[in-house]
Length: 149
Image 1 (cartoon, rainbow, N blue to C red):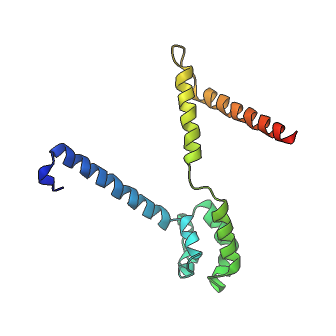
Image 2: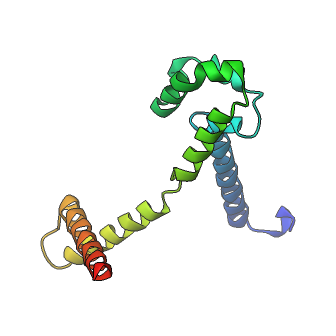
């Protein structure tokens, strides 16, 4: 729909939505151009191995630095070394980049905090969080004991 047929509020909202989408895309691009994500590009192609090996240490996160300290010589000899590729693939399979489960836990704790603070003194976040973790541990232990029998 042409902007001439929409109100200024709608145009402003559309502009805001497009700006937020472009910022998100740019943030994702920056995130994947830096470490540790940049190391995983070696799985697809060994073309950037020299660039990665010559990267200054100030650009590396602790995991990337340890990985390069361990594999730097192998990468210089063979950018598509099976040892490096297997290590990266196994790390990618085991890594948890998504924080949805963590955020869901925070949401539950925030709701519990609001419920415990309703018409009473305000509960402390660390106490509510500890209470929630304790209840999860009890549930896990109960399920574990139930499966064992």
